[in-house]
Each structure stands twice: as structure tokens, then as C-alpha cells.
Length: 249
Image (cartoon, rainbow, N blue to C red; front, side, top):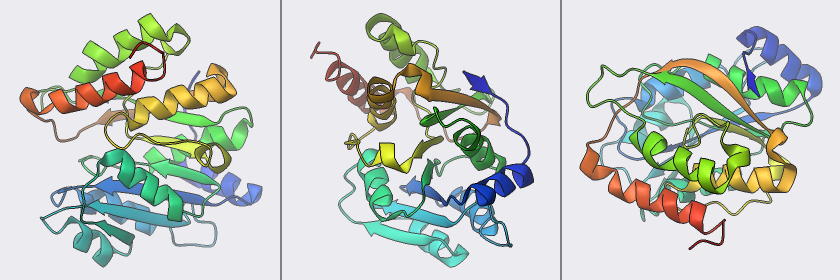
């Protein structure tokens, strides 16, 4: 199921009417050039009588470039980790302290982040009680550097088609933009590294059924792309997360 969400004010009003709280969590490691562009609109969304966002939690995962200090100065709650255990561990740490009924995760390296990312992810959870997890889908800006989506298209989606065909409809299984109901998140054991998103997807689908997973179109997403040689570790962790859940490993 892919959904096009209404505007930000409408979603904020629906959230307030439902009496729910929304926490937005941002795992970040050495994202000083982009973290302000992500955190600033999130903090701005805390204001007003009917805010869309109730809490912004940034986990500084061992940054050495001042990422955490930038987020703190902008008004986010910042948790600092010096061990750099991985993206999934940072997300789990944020989830432990977040107080929202709906928890939204967004990446810190997005160059064109807007608050509509959050409203789009939250809206299906307000309008359909059967939806438990919402994944963002998007168009990549292929002209910025080396492109992107290589691990998704060459590994993650083929794995789902072969081993978990009921999830083959998910366009961006590795997307860092995701929203999940608190009661479901509390029952998950998150992968410590880059297998976290696909592991969360599989676990929610198995517990609640594939129909509990929705997708929303976030438009174009521009982010920092890594050289091919840096993607091997991510691919290995994604592969391990899938195989450990399919009795193939």
C-alpha cells in the first residue's frame, strides 16, 4: 500500500485530535554539513498550540566533527555515544528514551529534508489502525555524485523477492525514513548496524502481517552518497539481517 499524505497542518491537527505524541529520532555520525538542515525544521515543528512533533532526539554516534553540538544548539535533545556501536544501536538508544506513541526515524545526511517527511510518515498511522510501520519511498537525485540505491537494488530487494516475496512490494526496504507505533517498537530487537531497517521491516511484517506495512511517497531525496568501496560493510550487515530471519544463514 502506497499513500500520498495530506498537508502538514492537517496531519498535525489529526495527531492532536487523536491525543497522540510523536517523537522524531535522528541517528547521526559525522553529519555536521547536513544535520542542521534536518534538526532545524524538526525543532520548529515543536512550537504552536497543535504541534506536529512533540520531541526531537538526536543520537550522536561517536561524531568527531561537532554534529552533536550543532543539534544541541538548535534545541534538540542530544544523546552522545563514544563507542560508535552502529546505526541500529543508535536508533535503539533513541527509542529507549523517546516518549512518543509514534516514533519516527529520519537520517541526518538528507540535504533537502522538510517537515513534510514527518507528516507523510505519520499520517497513515493516524487514519488506519491496521498500519503499524510506514516506510518512506522517494526518487533519488541521480546527478549528485555517484548516484545511490546500489545496496537496495542489487541486494536488498532481490533478497526479499527470493526469500520473502510477501515483502517484494516494498520499494525502499533500507530507507532511513520510517515511522512505527510504540507498542510494536517495544517488541523489537533492533540490529546494531546497517541491517536495522530491513530487520525491522521483516519483524513487523511477521508479527502483524505484511498488510501492516505502508509506504508513503516523500518525493525527491538528496543525500550524501558513499563510494562503492564503503558499501561492502553495509551490504554484509543487510545480508546477515535477512539470512538470520530466514533460516538460511
